[in-house]
Image (cartoon, rainbow, N blue to C red; front, side):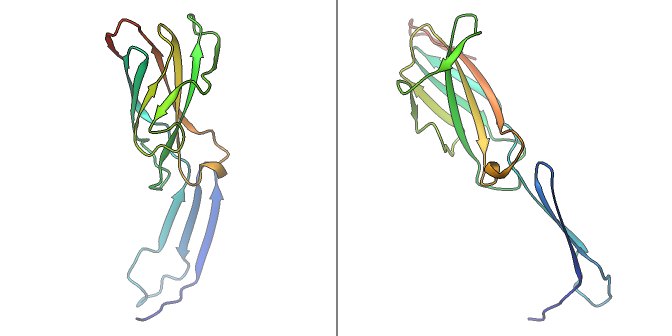
Length: 160
């Protein structure tokens, strides 16, 4: 294997993504016939998309599509935050430990969660947050989508 050493210029900058820009400063003949510039961008993902909720009495299935922008990474996961809201939606408080998430509330790898043990005839607001391995290092807010749900005690299914 032949090794080529080329003078390279390395530029790094951070806006909402870390971007590495490698540029071949010498465009010599007989060097590697490849691109003279390579750009790698890594950053947090955008918000999940297309949220759907299906209510069945005091349970709700929350589904969404993956973010359009993965931040250049394949390790997307989701966290859910639950708030119980007043009838007019002006006052919301955290749900607490009485509400259960299947498979779990944080670090979910699939784009679907079942939420159980909700109160009947109540309003809830769920925030689904997408994240990846560089989200904790980004100064930009996390990508989120909000799904509002009203539970029922009648047993009828409601799809929003």
